[in-house]
Image (cartoon, rainbow, N blue to C red; front, side, top):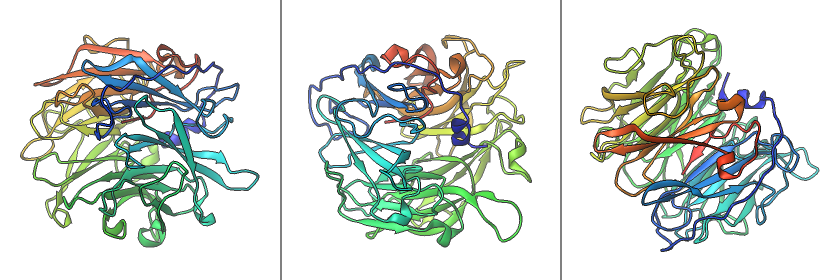
Length: 478
């Protein structure tokens, strides 16, 4: 069962939504990736997709916490929903606004924008669902938004089921890839996208026809170092015989957009980062069920696979598989751990190698079931390694809170340099905290990498959001 299946089965409760002012930029725009208000510090978008908004259960909202010289500052924040002035749409039950997020400078003005895939949004009185809402960054933060829908009817079935942004054609403008749910297709909106919602052109890609893989996950990054963003498509493959299995397909960026290259290891999530500092992005895929004869029965504890990049795309180097039983990786692989449920990458100690944080949201701590745990693995000249690995849970010294059953600490993870010191800090979401209200933890980084010392946690209500079930921290982006 995948994350979004769990979300749709959630029990929803009530809450009130309030909006709070954004930080005011002192220098704009910075052209820094992840900087929504242009002040030179990266910011963070946090989803609360099952929150009740304007009396509608499961309407959802997105919180923004702004970066400062001291890191992410919860006193400088916004709450954004379809009930917010300047944001299109109206709150409806089951919209789950925020459960799909990506970021990029969509209109080329130097401010990073937030794209929300509102795949549950019904389009008028038609049978079509799904819009893409761009929340525009600016000197005063996010103040307005624009809806985008596909002009191609066959590509509208839950448009925004998965989204990813990048310069796929190498023309210097950010493009947007958006997958549908049932229709096996991708929309590639060519940037720049205007604030009227118009893109310069649109390309449709049928991934099932080309690869037999349904697009249940999209991850963008430069694998071959050519300056064009490549796209990893992840999902279930329908083989000619046997059960469905997870597979990935790499699409390389080109002047005409993403072009299919080859199939890779399967998984449910991924990140692309240069873990060996050779100039090429490496593909780290997470399969929380781990490939086995019957994945839905819990797998073997979960695994991540590192497929190294090269000038031609995928390197001939043998992919490396890492589990909690790998040397120097904390813990022990156990059924239902979910190691690889969530992934993010960034340089946590400033040594130039990308590190990878791995969420194991189903990890049980003693008799505490599914409390959750995260592990940070270091990049090195030889690749991703367990040497120097660090692991954190709510039972780790100096980490706020106490591990409880069904907290799902590590449900979402994110690495970002919010204080501009050259080291990425760790952000961890636990959607099940306080019986599905959800919370987020912030960890600092030093020259030795991430540290629990000085870590802090906060909830949606800390930012002025609603009380009650929200899955706050279920999705993180910046």
